[in-house]
Amino acid sequence: MEGEPKKNMGQVIQEDGRYPVEAFGFLHEALNRAAKTIYGDDAPTGGRRHVTGQQLCHSLRELAVERWGMLAPTVLSKWNVNATIDFGNMVYLLIENDLMKKADEDSIEDFRDVYDFDEAFAVEEDFEVTE
Image (cartoon, rainbow, N blue to C red; front, side, top):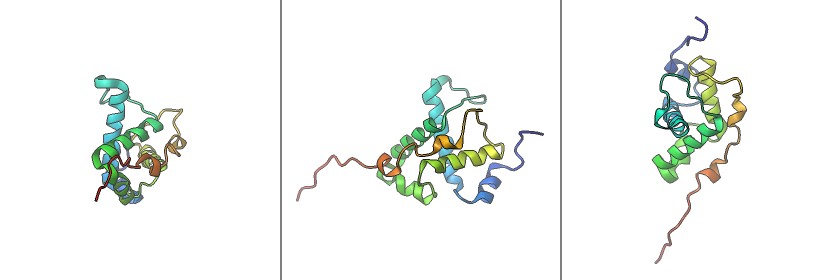
């Protein structure tokens, strides 16, 4: 049937090999977070709940900082995620394998250079070290 996944997500991720399954789990969590931010508590769970690439990237950043703080870039780097386009590569891998849907106006370019990782994950040092 057209539009039905030919492979499960685990197979797609393993065959692609660029990003580990944990990165896709994190992507899913951030997608849910972005949908809740946009749609509130009434966010549809089974139906259409579109978020833009930029919205998803910002949700991913917020979740990473909340979860790992100053270690966020280290964790993401271990997953081969070093720029916002990597989030786009993950999303479009799922789209190409009919595991996610996109709107006609969506493009992988929506994920390019949404923010600079060094700046986005910079830790503000608001304490003084005294001897």
